Length: 169
Image 1 (spheres, rainbow, N blue to C red):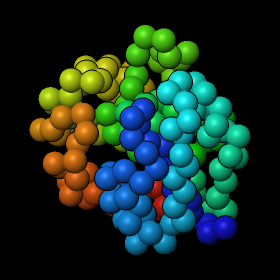
Image 2: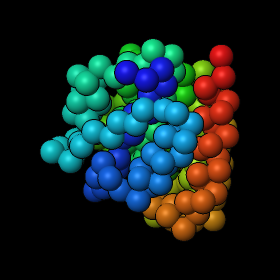
Image 3: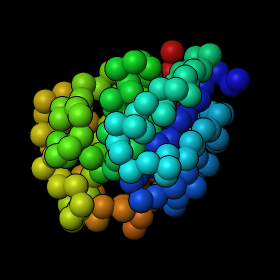
Image 4: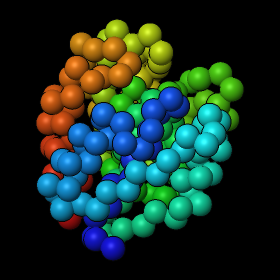
């Protein structure tokens, strides 16, 4: 096991090798992190996905970093209360969604950042604004939609800086 491990959680209709994960995983590897990207597509239930992540018992010798997109952002945040990662990087996280068990999950990480698009029609930007205010979390607003793929290079730069900050001891 490497000292630093990044665990990705994909969105509801995405997969473990989606565009954002593949791109950000390469950046994580450049920072000498081990990368894990479990497949949660066997269930569309967000809270079942949280249980799946916790069952994997992600660990790192030094820093565990959780990265989640959309439903995966919710999954990573809820799991952070148990896993206590060093970092939590969230893209268009699905917070305040009817039917999800935790309506305002408490993030538990030393370094937390959210990226959200202004034109997101799946998860309203206001949800991330509200969450960032409630939990005093950095919020990066991009001129993009829910997928954020057209601003991937900007997200990659943010993620690289996020990793540098998080991996410092």
